[in-house]
Image 1 (tube, rainbow, N blue to C red):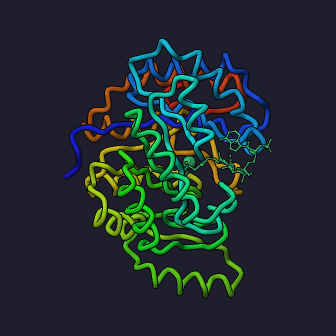
Image 2 (image 1 turned 90 degrees about the horizontal axis):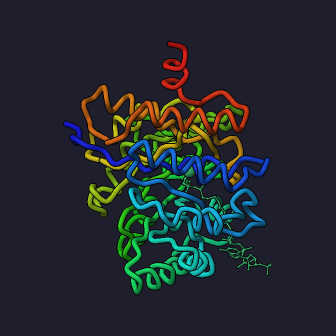
Length: 322
Ligand code: HMG
Ligand code: MG
C-alpha cells in the first residue's frame, strides 16, 4: 500500500536555479516562488545562504527572502551550510533551514570543502542555534546510491549519516540521489560493487545502485515518516524510484518545477524529477498533494520562457500541446 497523501517539497528555485550560469534577476525568482506557492505547494525551498563564490546564482539570497516576507501560505526553507549562513538566513527572515551532508567522502569535499565528520560537527552547531529559535532544520544527504567519484555507495554509509542527522535534531531527512543513477532494483550492494568493478575494467561507466536496500537501511535507524526522497532524473529513473519509495512508506517527495536543475559540484547531474510529472503520477494513484496542476504548469511555463528553454516535464509538454 502507499500513503493517501504526499507532501511535495518544491526545490526548483534553489536546486533548479543554482546551476544556471546566467544570473536570473531577483524579481524573476520571487515571482516564480509566488507562483509555485499559489499552485498549492506546501513547501518551496527558496534559496541558499552559501558562499557566493561557490554558487554565484544565489548571491541574492537575502533579497529573495526579504521580498517574500508576506508569503505565509507555504513554508520557505533555505539552505545553510554553516553558522554564518544560518545567521544570515535568520536575519533575512528565514523560519526554516536545511543543512546538507553527503554519504560520499569525495562529494562532501567537492560540495562543501570538508569531510563528512567535519560537516556533521559544523551542522551540530547550526542545529543547536536553530533549536534556540525553534527553527526546524531539514537534513539532506547527497549521493545516497551513487557518487560521481566513488561509484556505488553502501547503504550502511547512508544509514550512518542519516542516524547522525536525526540524532542531532533534524526534523526531516531528505535522501538525495544527486546523480540520478539509482534504480528500484533489489540487487545487493556487494553484487553492484563487483559488477561495477568488472564494468570499470571494461571501461564502461556504470555507477548504479538500488534505492531499495538504501531505504531499508535508513528506515532501520530513522522513522519512515521523517524521510523524504530527492531524485535527480539523470537516467530517467526518478518516477519509478518514487513509486518504489511510496511503497516503502515514504510520504515526502522533493521535485523541481519543469525538472529544472542539477548540482554545480556533480558534473553531468541533470535536474530533479519534474514536479508536474510527480503531481500527474500521484493524481493517477489517487494520492492527494493539494497541488493544482494547471497553476503549477503556469509557474513552469513562466520560468521556462524566461530561461528560453523547453520544459523538462513530460506532463507539461504533453498538456501544453492539447
Ligand atoms: P570554504 O571556502 O571552505 O569556506 O567553503 P570558508 O569557511 O573557508 O570561507 C571562505 C569564504 O567564504 C569566506 O569569505 C567566508 O566568509 C565565506 P572570504 O573571507 O574569502 O571573503 N563564507 C560564506 N559566505 C556566505 N555565506 C556563507 C559562507 N560561508 C563561508 N554561508 C562552504 C565552505 C560550505 C561555505 C562552501 O563550500 C559552500 O558555500 N558550498 C555550497 C555548495 C552548494 O551550495 N552546493 C549545492 C547545494 S547541495 C545540493 O545541491 C545537493 C542537494 O540538492 C541534495 C542532492 O541532490 O543530493 C541538497
Ligand atoms: Mg539536489
